[in-house]
Structure formats: structure tokens, C-alpha cells
Length: 477
Image (tube, rainbow, N blue to C red; front, side, top):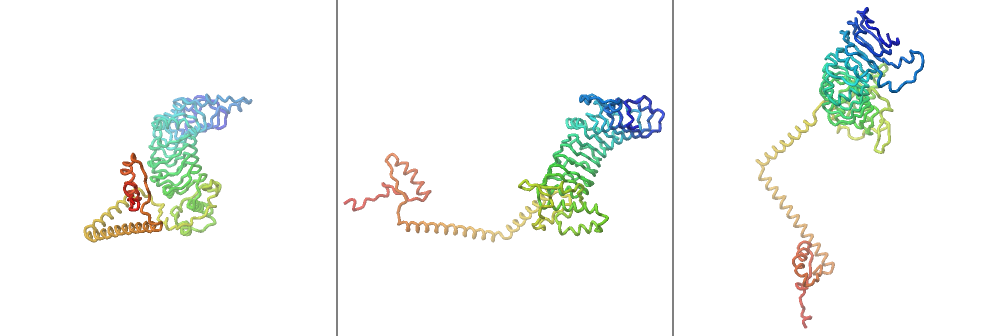
């Protein structure tokens, strides 16, 4: 019954079709629905109410009518609170792209379906036992009101039960992901076109069954701690169109177990290792698309490339699913844009990085602590053994070093004195460096302050008239 121009349904319209299993009412102009409209459909399993809009009435009436921009605030499908009560066996409900009135959200409290699509309906909130624990597939894309309610109060997400396996929440201004913690059975999570900017090591820690994750067109940047360490089943990861500029070691660890990867349209900083990673993954993608002409097995291709890409060969099974040269560009230090494949290959010694095991999920922090602890106790043990068995030799060695140091200092001082004497002889063998004349009022300051600082500290020979002037015989005569 799609595109039939229905603006309303009569009560008991389907009373004579008790065996009806699927009902499609999409692309009509219905204004309201109640329980009487679905009487007799106890065996119905699939109901499609998508793309229902009152705007369709204009074309059906036969004349053009100027659209009132304020109608969008009051128009929408009116669902009674018990509208789905007769549909006891309903398992699939699609209301996508159908504008709902705000109070129509009450109608979903009694729905116990397995698959539900509420995308772009304008529904403002999900509360209480809306899902009744049976829901496995949910699409709430394009409903920022739901996201706002969840961010304001995490308890509003209690309808998202642990049985949920597929969740689609795109273009909904999602920023925080704490409300996902209870969804331990998720296998598919699509969060594209949101405002997510940070991933932590607890964001997906409880989702051990997660297989497909779409974080494209967000604001995700580099991370420096393992994010997907608990997601061993993850094989599709889309991080395209984000704010990633480098691939950190932790990111490489996380991507090592991913089968299909998309990281294009990011603001990469040019680096040879990034070029090799993308080049290798892109080569795998090309190998997939040309399986009819290629006879090289994956193991042979890995062996063939290992010499050229020995640093990154552990991620040989990762495939770039969005590869396009236009999507994979980088920016150098001069803020100039280049294609990644225009960068030079790495020329440093690759053997320094051969121990980079991207396939092993290791806790590097714990490993470092253990390593330094063993080193500390090792040095302590060696020092103790030396102290017990060879203390006399160590003592004798320290005495020799001390004596050598003292002799070196004495030698340096003697050389300095000889150098000064040599300079004095060249300058005319002066006995004094400076003559100080002073009055009787300044005499005490000169003797107590000036003289000690110059002669003792600065090693300057001072001539004072009352101390150093000796009256000669010639003067007396």
C-alpha cells in the first residue's frame, strides 16, 4: 500500500486479513494512527511506516499551496499510546523519515520488536522499558534530541539493553560515548557524522563482540593508549574524515588486528613510515580487486614484500577500503600538501625497528616496569658480591683515584702560579697591582673590607702608604 495517498485509515481496516505477515504503508500522508487501525493483525511481523509526510497532500489535492515554514513545528504523525498493542507478534518496525509528534514517543513503551528504525523521526527521548529487552537492531540516526537527553542523564539510555547487537546513531551530535558501556553484545556500531573527538581505553572495553565500527566524519584525533585491546573480533574500522595526523605505536597495535581499514581524508603529517603503511595496505586492496588476474597467494605476497616493508609486514592482512590518492594526502612542515606516495621511502636502518611486533597485544607499561626492576636488582646483586669478595681492591682503587686527582689539582695550581710569574716578569716585575689612597675617615673601611676582599679573594697585590711605604735613606738625608 505504498504511494496510495492515504491520509487516514478506517478502523478495523485489516480485520479480514488475519494471516497478513507484512504491511507496507510507506510514502503516504497519514496524520494519525490508533490501535483500532490494526485490529486483526495479531500475526503481523513486519510493519513499514517510513516516509509518511503531510507535505504529500499538496500534490494529491491538485493545486499548489505555499508552504508554511512553521508547519514543521506542529505537523507530524500522531501515534496513540496503544497503537501497537494488537500487533503481538511484531518483530520489525520501520518508522524512518516519518516526522513524529513529541508525545508519540509513548507509543513505543509497549513495543517488543527485534528490529526498530527511528531515524530522522524527531523523536525527543527514549525512556524506561521502551525496548522491553528484546531489541537487537536499532537505528536512531538524525535525532539530536535523543542524544541531548542521553548526555544530560545517562539513565535515559536504560532502554538500550545488553541484547542490542546493531546500533546506528549517525548525524545525531553525539560527543560522549559513556552511555554505550552496558551494550556488551554489540557487533555493529555506526557513529558517523557526529562530534566525537576523544577515544579512551574504556570506551569499547566491554564490547568484546564488536565487529564493525564506523567513526567516520567526526573529530577523532591521535590516541596514545590502546583503545581496541579488548575488541579482538573487530575486522572493519572506519576512521576516515577525522583529525588524525600521525599513526602512533598504540594506533598501529590497534589496527594490526583489523581486516578492513579506512583512514582517508585525514590531516596527515608527511612521514616515510606513514607512506609505507598506506602503500602496503593499498597494495592489498588492489590485490583483492584483481584476484582474477593475480596468481600470487597472500602468503607469497607477504614473503615478497617482507624485504621492502619489514617494519610493517605484521599488518599485511589489513586492507584499505577507501583508497584513493585524493583521500590520502599529507602536509609537510612548510604547510604544503603532497600525495603520500610523493614522499621518499625511509632510508634509516630498518633493523632498529624489526622488533616492532604489531601483532602482539602487549602491555608495554608493565613490561617496562618489570625490565627496570630486574635491572635494579641485578646491579644491586653484582655490587653486593663485589663488596663482599673484593672490598680491599676497591678501597685501594679509590685511594689511587683520590691521589691522582689531588696531584692533578696541585699540578694545575703550580702551572697557574708559574704562568702568573712569567707574566709579571714580562710586565716589568711590578711588586703591586694597585695603589690605594684614602683619608683618615675611610681608613677603617679600607682595612676591614676592601683589603681582605682584594688580597685574599681576588689575589690582587695592594699598596698602602701606611703599610708599604718605607722611608729610604736618601729621603731622610
